[in-house]
Image 1 (cartoon, one colour):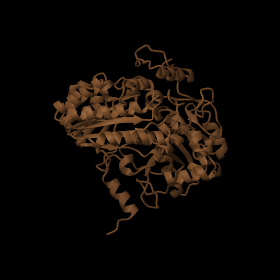
Image 2 (cartoon, rainbow, N blue to C red; image 1 turned 45 degrees about the vertical axis):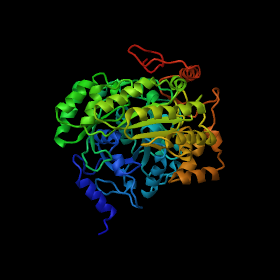
Image 3 (spheres, one colour; image 1 turned 180 degrees about the horizontal axis):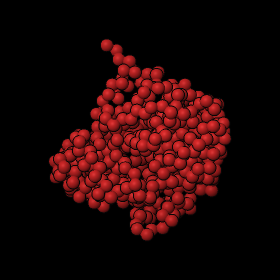
Image 4 (cartoon, helix red, strand yellow; image 1 turned 135 degrees about the vertical axis):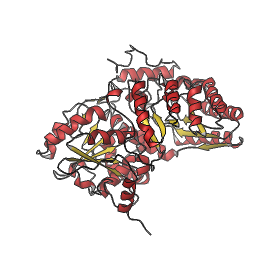
Length: 533
């Protein structure tokens, strides 16, 4: 029997616990994730915003996910997208821009903001991509949440409700006056807003389903990172680093026991959590398996690795990012070769036999000798661990509001040469597999990451990476312009966003990278970057 799309939605909802269905008469908010249900329900941000909005008496929030077919309805009540007053997209990855456009079309909503009428929903976006550079989407979305939704959404919803009687343009003008909200029709400097105290807002799985990508109960331990890795957007745009208190985490984990799921600890670097060993012992003491989003090889502990092994982990992932001492100084991650081998040794002692190494190629100041060093390090790790080893290597994509934001995307010839070196290195190693993202796909990601409003039309016309490349070229745009090194004195497209630190600070970090100088991690009382004013 062929199951219909509506039947599939009903089946998914029937398999959930804690979903919310409200009666009418409230502001109807469509929370849209531009990917599949399985991927979307593994995104902690969806759970946080869903609970936040449905915790209000005046809002009824329902979820939408990217369908496989040509029909699109809400999960909770099978309502079309264009019947909602507000549609909010969570944008975590640049390729999802095209999925968002597809969802708008399937929802019978014009993707072009200027062509929508007073009778159309307001279309807003939040998430990392919206916070870092909204300009490539400026002709599609009416407004962007710049920063963390817990701080901004309550006031944004209040203003949307208060302006229901106004024409569309006047409403947008009012929204543009809110802190943390960027309205492309009324551009101005916007300051990123963030939570001071994570304990004030719970951040854990709220809707229970067995049909998520990782099938875990997610718990956020910390937000932000103070390690100053110069390539990393999360390390700069989620500052300052903040931890949840251990007591709050313990309560959330006890609440999770009833569902019998593996605990997934979320954060930029779980091993940096000050009481990570005590937290691990508490989880295992309650007979719950656990996993983590990521850890750092220089702060990983034996207790953490043993806890992961007890939770059924078969492959331990370590992210050196680079292979040579020179490039370690350039990226400032602080992970040495000794740290890598220590993490692998902890894995072996815990009974984990398989490992994965993450690297990037095409970084600023990198040469092919540095790429060869990746192959040499891989060979040494393989000899040390003995089991299966996966080498994951991807092209570096320069990101806004990082010290490497001015850097070019490496040329196709250079990247092909780098991958050739690494494949040759891997070919002679038994039990080693190399995987990588495509160069062309990474090029598109780089264009979207640092793009301006001129590419917005090409995004609007596209539902895939292939569509975008065609529409980009048809518009007469030059990809070399978007992939080039940006002069230091050129105004930045995203320069109107106040992330808390100055361009001069980022430029100084770029110069320190060129000089192979380290920058210490954040510490209490530090005022270097300007975020902690």
